[in-house]
Image (cartoon, rainbow, N blue to C red; front, side):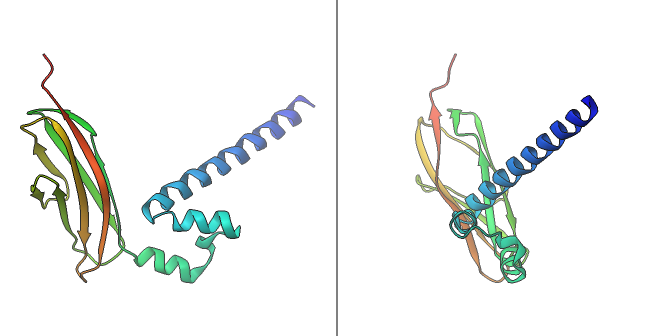
Length: 146
């Protein structure tokens, strides 16, 4: 009897784990596509990834993401990392900062000489000229701490 209870409990944990994984995956995909996928699942109650036409469109659509440290000190190197999926390679990357600095590497490094809040956008262009981007990001640059 104890073995049966353990099996049922394991099945419950597996089910909960799968459900949590699906929610996290949809949240990530939703953030990459402006929330369109997540909204469709919630509003319509269906899974767009089971629709072959939608899946084909999603796989060929250009999308990007950016990772960076949101707070650095004056003189410290700040790293900006990007990735792109879909579209047609090769990709061109452009990090455009509000102080006029433009970086064109996929994974860029920059040093800030003055404290402040620096806003920037990332635009990725594929070989066919399609664009995708992450916008309204910012990094806070603090005075050097002793």
